[in-house]
Image 1 (cartoon, rainbow, N blue to C red):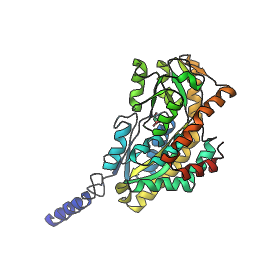
Image 2 (image 1 turned 120 degrees about the vertical axis):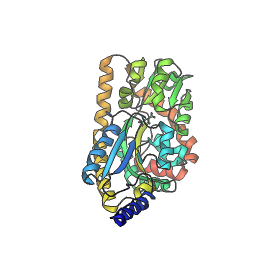
Image 3 (image 1 turned 90 degrees about the horizontal axis):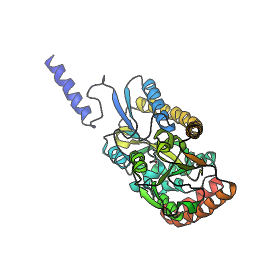
Image 4 (image 1 turned 135 degrees about the horizontal axis):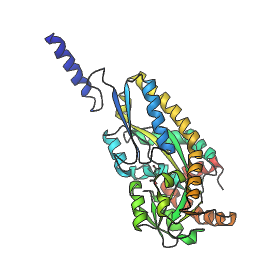
Length: 335
Ligand code: LMR
């Protein structure tokens, strides 16, 4: 008996040596913490919840998936550091947030008016370019599992914005992306990097004059309650890379990992299938509320937005990679 206890302890210690997240005994479920910054009732939030449901099912309860929405564990920048340290196992940061990690190529997805449609964009993400982008993460201790959609961005502001010139001198919050910084400067705005969880207060107190985001984010974070104006410009894309800590992922038993892969595949299909409706419904709800006056740009206005945006492609091409940009332009049929 004494021998059995000693052997069990030794086994527990041995498994424990693989990392804090590995179970001490076979019966303990493996805990996978999935942190994100948006509300549960968004495309990403619902995708994460779907992954939990399927991941626990397909691994027969061997994995316990804990979802932490709304920046309750980490804010934007801290998330990626925590993942690399192994304090959290899974994230789905927006593609704009990979530049500060040294994966500047991801910022190609921030270029305004580059992608004519989500379908064109998916060709890039699911083809060889997407695979190459994920490969860039491996040296940083990260495995890329999937791309998830949110949608196209609109502006909200405390002054009417119809065309780029209306942004002149306005302090506009951006995610931490050099492309978004260049984009705002090209419009004459003053870009202000700010964590997503701080935007509502920034808008409410007037520290910033406006921001760009998808309708589902504007609605669920209640930005529309503290912004008088909006412009339905659809000028750029927000989407996500679902990523895991490489050491954690590689250390999983093969059957567990394949169960999670299957769950991720199905959660991706689900999340991408609801993204457009979620954004359309959010816009309808905001318009109905009457709190923000959303301007629908005319074709002539959009021409101005495109003209003001296009120089940003060239300006950012050496940062993103000239060849990569050319390849993406060709793949999506950009004009
Ligand atoms: C933002 O910071 O504006 C968005 O990327 C948040 C998100 O994850 O959708």
